[in-house]
Length: 65
Image 1 (cartoon, rainbow, N blue to C red):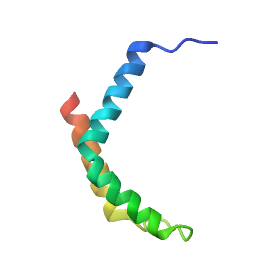
Image 2: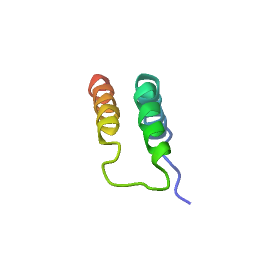
Image 3: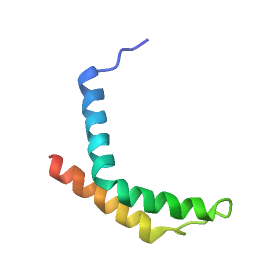
C-alpha cells in the first residue's frame, strides 16, 4: 500500500478547514436549498446559492496563496 504524504494531507485538511470556517453560512444556505428540493433535484435549481458558496470558497483560496 502506498503511503500518503502527511504534509500534503495536512495542507489539504487546513485548506478545507479554512473554507468551512469562512463559508459555513453559504454552505448551509446552499445545502438547505438542495435539501428542500429532494427528491426532485434538477440542474441549476439552487444556482444562486451555489454561486455564492463557490465565490466564497474561491476568495478563501485566493487569500491562502
